[in-house]
Length: 194
Image (cartoon, one colour):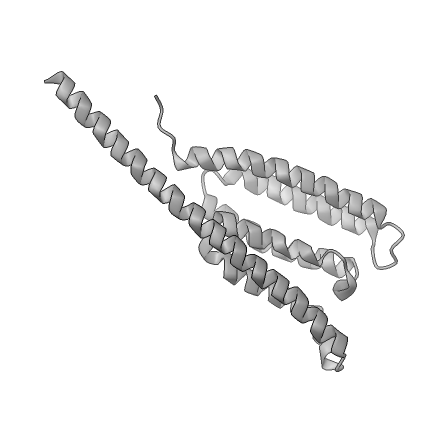
């Protein structure tokens, strides 16, 4: 019987992640289609960005198994940049797509739990870029809107980070149990030979 390796767990989760990304991409295409009359939204550019987001994640997905940490960091950076541009072309501060900043936070929480709050800080800083002008003009509504969005991102990061840390500890315990089981099997095999 072959033991379960954490790489096998990642591969199994990777297949599920790929399915989730495909559903997410379909959802975003539907949003682009339904929002085609929105004056803030350039549908062609939006679809191009969605295709770039999907293609980059598909390429990085191939490397998750061999280099999960590096692929995750590259994914975090690339997705953050693409999502910022996506937000910019879909209306900036008025865009309904700002919750997409949760994607890198979820990626960090599940792949690199120790990076979850760092990524939330990055996403918050990127979101703040869309509010610099309204805040400097003293627009009171912008401050409340920004506080709500930042609070939502940070709360989500806290929840996802907690879940990710718990899963990481569970994987560590599983790996330790697998090692103990292998040692017991080796010991039993040696006793049988004697």
